[in-house]
Length: 102
Image (cartoon, helix red, strand yellow):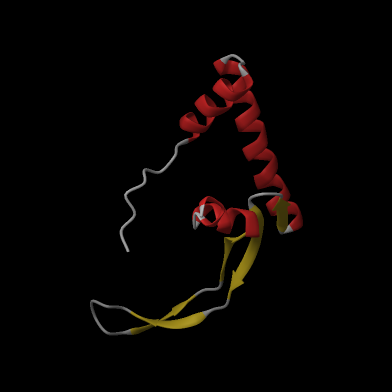
């Protein structure tokens, strides 16, 4: 399923914060950078964070498994790894699905 929406960069977020709060670009950059760094630190330290209106970010474990090299057909062992998943809040789900606009 193709999505025609552009990905928002950190600079787009800085601009949005600057305009909403009517602050300088430097202040907005500091706020956004601090927020992102804090979220990353909390995820690493605690394993999960809940952000009202957004959802819950959680570190998840992927177990080791057997995979197949598509080029050779050879079976290979894929090591266990960690990933981050987002479980969106009900509010975010509704907004994304335009339920509040109906």
